[in-house]
Image (cartoon, rainbow, N blue to C red; front, top):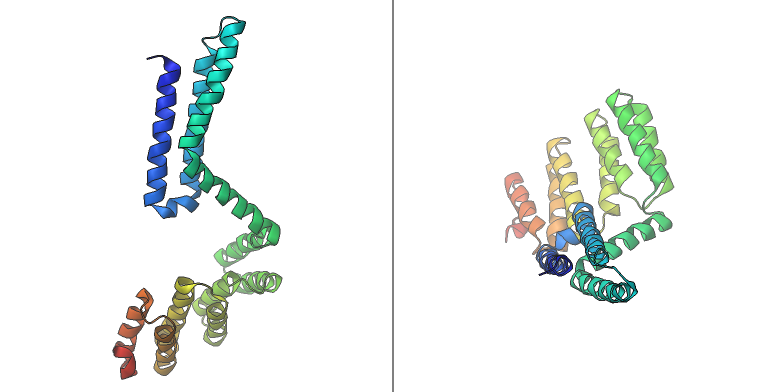
Length: 234
């Protein structure tokens, strides 16, 4: 079997294996490194196939045949790698859309870097000011509030920290993010503020909103530990 055919079979087989892996492990469909690794191997195999076909060209007729083989072969390789390539294109378009819409703000990322540097040198006012500035730029973004909350808690500003933790809880979207934010708020109320009743109220809110979710079980355990409402133990 000649080299072009071997490379073609390897490239198509690689596409089948990659498609199955991406299907079985959905998390890889939005994993940058997995997508980049597939794309690099796909491009390398495609290039090797073109080179292998081109190396057999010796006259005009052979050139025409080679062009036909290159087009047909690349079409096969593309078809067998279509699913992973689709996920790569979707991932890139999502990044471009978020960047264009302001969901990914380069200036905000730079502010986080500066704030982290300020935290490292224990310049708390500078770090908080940078996080506050980021929060004002995008009022729907929970991340600067989360960072402020954790920093305020660390430096002993409990009341302000709770305000920010509540802001994080209000801005959180999706079941997992929503529940995690409230579990963290309940934890701070319970462990740092000594407010068992407040913590129980937060945990009960999780159970009411997502009674069958995986976070509800944790909330029930925390309520039981605090001797909270019996109705939530069911």
